[in-house]
Amino acid sequence: MSLRFALTPGEPAGIGPDLCLLLARSAQPHPLIAIASRTLLQERAGQLGLAIDLKDVSPAAWPERPAKAGQLYVWDTPLAAPVRPGQLDRANAAYVLETLTRAGQGCLDGHFAGMITAPVHKGVINEAGIPFSGHTEFLADLTHTAQVVMMLATRGLRVALATTHLPLREVADAISDERLSRVARILHADLRDKFGIAHPRILVCGLNPHAGEGGHLGREEIEVIEPCLERLRGEGLDLVGPLPADTLFTPKHLEHCDAVLAMYHDQGLPVLKYKGFGAAVNVTLGLPIIRTSVDHGTALDLAGSGRIDSGSLQVALETAYQMAASRC
Image 1 (cartoon, rainbow, N blue to C red):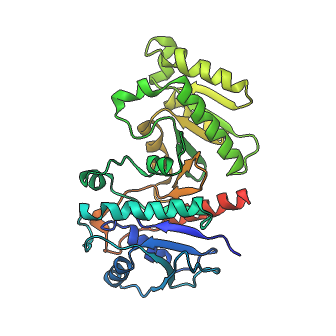
Image 2: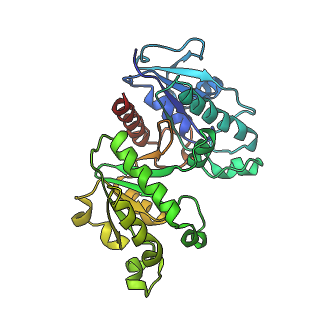
Image 3: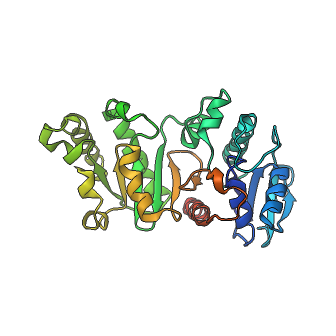
């Protein structure tokens, strides 16, 4: 039996539903289940002028074969309010989280080999009174995982983050020996176990400009990062650094590594998105399940227009398939 995967369209007013429908024009190698409102997908297909045959499925009757080109399996998840492309409605915040819960729990229960997520809108979920900082943290809570790692990847570059969605003024305090140790171990283990890299080599960014310039531009490298890396090397991890980020992100260094560990969100991700925007994937490491996602946001202004590129979602699908195959 072919591996089965879950697909969540994310914010219903954004381009996530459009992406799912565009992908359905081509056959996938595995059964792919869109966990979404059937009504939403029907309406959006009409707005896009797409003739997609929506096939109802549920835990009582999962498909064993991939859908044909022009078909999409749908596990119907009702909306709370009608959707207009481009117009956020906090009434549907709970719907978005229900799709993620169904997908995540389905992975834990063995129904799905992995889940692929389209973008959500963090702001409207919080405006609905539901604390939410992102997919990564939500799935960590759902799976009772103490530490997860956010990694984005494109051809020739993988960037993992020591911290994720934190205000910049809080980052330095968050860079602790405990956090760095956990993140580096997870990154090493998942590169080995989920990506099939026997001996991963990881380049580690410093926190400060010039990696602290010997303590003159900050002492986090001397007091926290360097001692932590040295201890982890003793455990067998191949870690290089801490290196200045503006030096590390050059071909001379990147051609000899399997991943980069950046200290914070906007240290590592601008480089990766410049290199591979539209063809990159977001992977949550450290989870007991496989989760990949697109590298972009909801693009509310493009929802229902047809003027979008589904390349990142296709890369996310292919990455999830490859990771699942590595675990078999």
